Length: 245
Image (tube, rainbow, N blue to C red; front, side, top):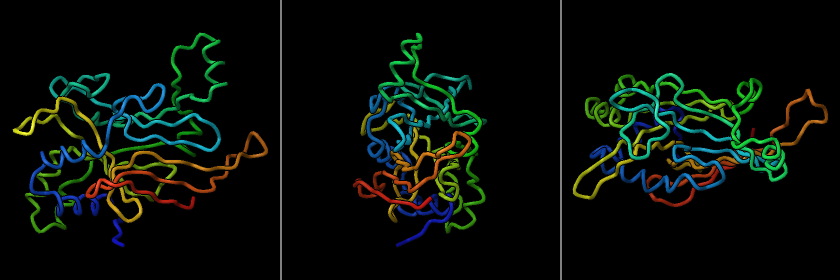
């Protein structure tokens, strides 16, 4: 089983297999990410990852923050637009209340949105996510064709992401810009989160966290295990891995 211990190793492996044509790889990843926007209540087309938990039905969503490629102004989504990732704060992480009883309580209070930003403890101790622009130039030094690697990777405006829940899990966020060629036209800007799942380079779809709730309110839950679900970049088949906390 091949190990990829860094985002650079993931990027180099993707280039080795798919580096001939960025447009073809763009279309491949669009197929792998599938349809977004109606997976659950309050789903967003730019949500590239979500966490389900044993505690209740509420989910933690991770949504790409886009700005217009020309004006650099924030946009509500990448649907029908040419966008780039917002450099400072590329990802919005938040809770979506899907537990039926909690939903009823919120709506009884007049709430129309089921979305809440993570609080300080949730960000720092459980579900926070940070991102930075991937250093393409540095990663290219390990390649046989550094100029081609830089040109190909730059087409995807890559970012590395770090998750509190999976601190040592390397991931690479790739932007899929609108494309138009003899195979048709794609008008949306989308993103794909790439990581290794079960030894295969995969598009990450969702994570499940099993935990035991504490006896006292001032204690944190104990994580029993984490499951990662995705789809193989090369094969298109489902991938899965169970991780210890």
